[in-house]
Length: 141
Image (tube, rainbow, N blue to C red):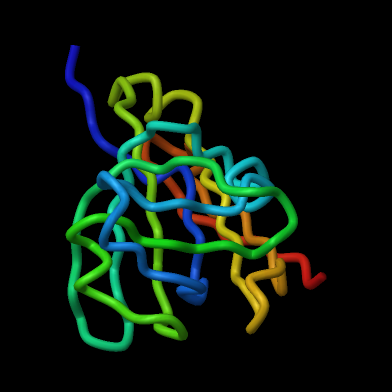
């Protein structure tokens, strides 16, 4: 069985609200944001800082819901500062043949300046004629 790693969730252009070097690792994310795209507590995520190009992997922990909280912790706090824009991506392992037969769908939330949902996008792959066709459909909030 061949497996592939595909994006299943992305928080796009979320703003750092705090950076806490004294917390033991991870990134704290508003629970509502995690729920909307399907990121689980303790799930591994890649984080990209759009302000300085730094990129790191860590795990997500839920913050207080409906606060817009985005707080890199531990050493990652040294890679950003409040106000920086981040992309947070979660991946999942999928059976390649299953994806070729049934497709795949990912959820993308584009944030506004308060880390609220500005746009919600479904991106995915649909099987068609023995190949996968990429699609993207969006709804504005």
